[in-house]
Structures are given as structure tokens and as C-alpha cells.
Length: 129
Image (tube, rainbow, N blue to C red; front, side, top):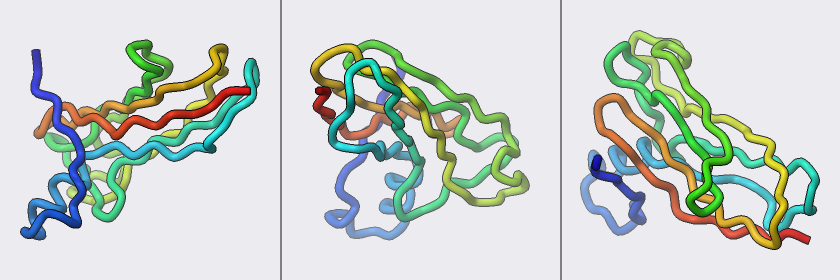
């Protein structure tokens, strides 16, 4: 079983390099606080909040997954060079349109860096009406 890394509040981290490392590998979920049942609902997952991740042939964000609890809702893969390659820095980002069928969504995202492994987002709860 691989190690799963989680975001920690970088305001509490002293070293700038550690802040950069944590932030650029962490997926962040952006969406509305509520959704309509059986209607498409946009959920954006963005890598990094304050720092950009490099896009090298051997070090890049390979994939982003969106979960509702333990159920995989969507997945996006990024080949090396998607953000410009040659060490270019950027924030991989994808918007998934999901259709809620329950009364609540318990969203979390996972990302995979080819050099630093799996990273999990903070959970986001969305009320469905």
C-alpha cells in the first residue's frame, strides 16, 4: 500500500521549501456548497494553491481523481509536457461534471506525482437538494 500524503496548513510551516513542497502536491477542491439532485454539478480540482508544480518528463502530476466517499466519480490523466514541459511550472486543473443522486456529497480528491507519490485533499461536504 503506498503512502498517502495530506495537505497541512502551510501557514504553520516555517521553511519556505517545505511550504512549496506541500502546497504544490496537494489537490484542492473548488465547487458550490450545494447541488441539485440528478443535475450536473461542476467540481474543479486544482493542484496547488500558492505554488506551481514542475512539468518535467520524469516529474509531473500524472493523474487527479475525484471521490464521493469511497466511490470513484471521475479521473483525469496528464501526460508529461501537458503544462509546457521542460521544467515549466503550472497548476494542473480539471473540472468534472458529476450528477448527485444522494442527499449529500462527501468529496475528496487524490493526485499522483511521479516523483512524490499520492496526495489527498481535505474533504468537502456538499448538500444536495
